[in-house]
Amino acid sequence: MAVLVTGGAGYIGSHMVLALTDVGIETVVIDNLSTGFAWAIAPAAKLVRGDIGDQELVSKVIRDHRVDAVIHFAGSIVVPDSVSDPLAYYSNNTVKSRSLMECAVKAKVPNFIFSSTAAVYGNPKSLPVFETDAPLPISPYGSSKLMTEIMLRDSHAAYGLNYVALRYFNVAGADPKGRSGQSTPRATHLIKVACQTALGQRPKMDVFGRDYDTPDGTCVRDYIHVSDLIAAHMDALSHLRKGGASGIYNCGYGKGYSVLEVIKAVERAHGSPFKVDYGPRRAGDPAGIVAGADRIRRELGWQPRHENLDFIVSSALAWEKHLQRRNAA
Image (cartoon, rainbow, N blue to C red):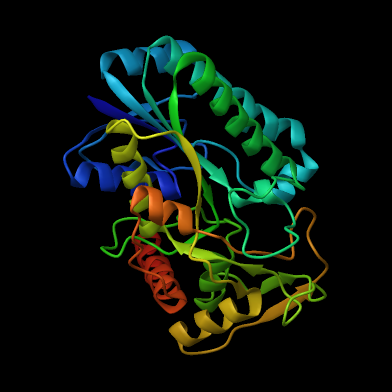
């Protein structure tokens, strides 16, 4: 039996493929390479270039590889872009997820793991935020992901599709072995942008908003190392394959850091400061969001290993240096 990874050429998806192939699980990737890179996919995996909205292609891959689990990463992720072009996000994140889900149901694939987001919570009234708190997304991005969660819930009830939805907090860092990392040149992830600025790849970085109701006025986020996030997916896969119950889980450490604290961590790792400009708030950004992450530890046995901002930052900086050398070669 094989695992189908959608978006497996992207940042998080490529780490998932590495983890699966590292333990000998047959892995097939569907990716249209619009934002991902074929070179990022572990050699032991098979890449099928295509779109998850192509039901004929998806059904063939599921059938040919005897897929028993789908791990779904493919989608659009930039919150401000979702505000300016919501219909594109509902198409790519919601409509195509529904199409993928239908293929899984028709093929009787028993297990589905979904890459959701803490953006479903919107601007929480209190922190940390737990899975039992009502989702109130404030961006089309968050709404598009919540709609997919609802479809999974209903598909489980109607068709028996077992699922785990993992609500990511802020994913950062790179594979400790240096095999993959965030590779999109113009990515908007804070830690990547800060690392690029430190290395002189950007003339400066912008901080959006200094008037939030937080200790230093900048947004507070819960940063999780990508390898720990992937470990949560591996735990979810094992859980489902053993007949475990469907559910929704936060993926974070329960500790928040402000934008300015992250910048200071990157400056420590790099050894020198860099230019920072301050601008107005971005649409769709909540002031702070921190995970209540007890459930995933308790029910899936998740045990994070890289729960340290300086380690997260140092691995991200090392990957940016690797990319710099790679691109110069």
